[in-house]
Image (cartoon, rainbow, N blue to C red):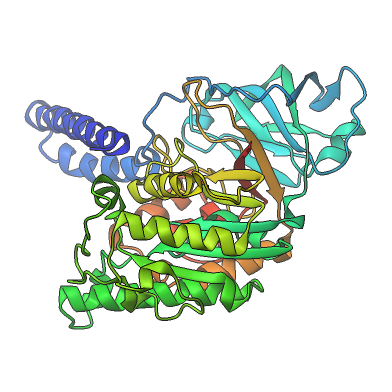
Length: 466
């Protein structure tokens, strides 16, 4: 069981215990006060739970985030004077640096019910956990000119800001001028994490590892059997992985679908020579999902879904594309099993290869500890995610996206079939309650939660130079 599954299991157990205790209290009120009181309170308590306590947050908001940046990241002490960020020494910026401000936040009492946030110059708003009381990291990338000129103003919304902080300046290098290859475990991962980067890159490749064919209940409602609906979903997502990057100007020849099976990468890694069939599609041949590819790969010879075939495919693609920048899931921040195996496969494929990328960027489309990150609304900046233990030393790399690029990214996500089905009824009710009671706004781009999470002022990666 993965760490996230363990955390979720513990969270659900604690919630059941809390509900049981609440039910006992309500029954006591009914017995000793009025019988109708529990009937009145139950729906009110349920609405309060959905509005304020339904987030999956597996840590205390009072914990400090703990980051270790590389030695070449420069730290500058700053002060907040009447809300304006003041540097103790002049700051010379080239314009392409990633800027991160470490600052302590303290939630107000309202910030326990409405999302606390920091408003930056009135043009950005970065939200944090309700009840926040600790060290957090604001993303100032794109605001360097205001910062250097002493015009950057911060204002806490439902929270107070400490008077002192630390500015981290990560030396810039515009990776859009490089050859970029994005590794996507599933169709839509590349767009969620890196549409802005690959759409502006000098040359871009998008390589999708799996067809994402499972959990096809939406298609079963059309009267298809489980295996038939899984194959249809896989074909649709395979098509998405080839077609949607074309919206960003990526040539069809640079879009590749490898057709391996969803959530089967860990089993493939454990037995590299063994063919691992799809869980739901009744398939043990990847070629059904590869037919849209414009190039031939080693795995096309037999279509066997093996780890060794995956490595051979990746090596062939790396040698053909020769990417200078390799973008793939972060090895520790992103807990999805296929994401973990995707980066492991790429690193194994690179071993002994005659071509090596200059830079690796890690991304996180999922988190262990906080299902809502990035917090806040569509179009807002992306603050650094929760990091509660000192771990690997990677430098943040933040790419600002203008409004036109954000909208193009939203349209790309809207073309993805997996993000199109309507949300379950309970989730729609929860969002309605959160809008009314917690002040949360829906994304203007789409109903799926990823429209809110991914269409942002920044794309955030973690950089390691090789």
